[in-house]
Length: 443
Image (cartoon, rainbow, N blue to C red):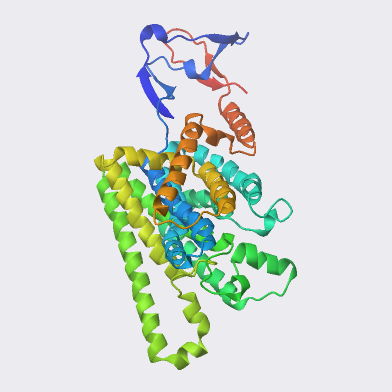
């Protein structure tokens, strides 16, 4: 929402009395006390607070989500697992990019929309509860069913948990403190993954859903659940990146922001590759060491996604930051505006599109069991076109406003009470001519 200011003329400045008491005091509305020209703030609904290029970057990450799910329902059902394995690896870019961009948006808006960020933060609380409750159930009905709906953890659960608590840290902790906090949470989480082994009951559920556990004892598995705590750490780091990007945008230096994202991406990818090469060298030159410390290499697996390992996050998250930098730069330079607009449609309706693609790939395509064709990219593009077509009317009707559990009115009511306490009537003493008027707050 935009705001515009105008100056009032003398004829527009008038003081309307509320009451006149016998003590010679006349109460006026507080906004009419001043007898000088003042500024009036007017809401202008013609422009959204959303940043189109960031929505396009989120839409780009959605493409990789769709690619992974398309692969599961196409290549692994027609006997072409070789191609499928390569595409699944490419699709691994989606999750760290999506979670990091979610945190990036919070950090970005905390700088560029500082005055409205508290409202945005309250909106995220509502959205987070929706994702954890109703959103999870909607997704589960496409696969696990109602009875087993909460035996699966989706990435939307991790994002819902993150946006419940992460934005509060943006306003309470400095960027360096948040970075340290995110790294500490991630390190302690992996200590729990490696060394905490509850047998059953509530501790076992807590490890599975909160901390993360290696599914079926298989490392580098491409299927599993999104534990809340490690992905929350990724979100927190994303807020640090977003705050830096937002500071560049606030200084009217968007290209410097894009270069910063590119540097982060390159550094992350190079770090991951260096560790990968070092671990491969250690495996060959020191087999006794690797046999004695198997968990060390598991911790450093490149494809360790469930739960997310540091090298996996650095490599695929870094590649994602390079993609985000490219999309933002393309938007700033006016490159491929039609394509960016389609990506923006997907990104702005990200949850709705995520639900639809779950049904398209998990139910429709899985049921069709299409045979393999070398023209499979056309099938994939057709599904993407379908998702864009359903996203456009959703965005046109502002469908995201329905993604709520209804606590928004509670926040609005609390705001009205707080404003009412600060907007008590003000009395003006009626003094003889020549004396200075004295303002008195009415109790």
